Image (cartoon, rainbow, N blue to C red):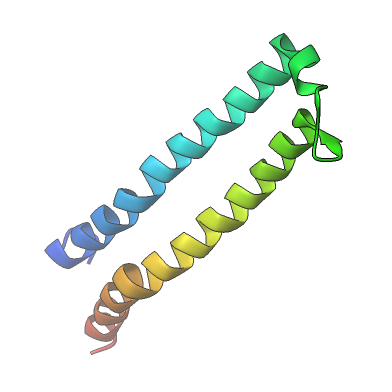
Length: 92
């Protein structure tokens, strides 16, 4: 089954979302660390009752939840049906 075109297509579908999103989030996280390290005075600037660093950190959590929600939608639409078809073929 692992060599079947259906399974390869499933892996490709999975990777089309996870790899780009993982790279984008990693870059976003590294940017946060670098800015916190090299622009700490700017991160300490007050903005709307908290400093920019806190807002930046909260944005990290927000993007984590957003990516998770996007993945759930993507997986339900694209990965789930393909995985179910492969499962059915293997059970037959």
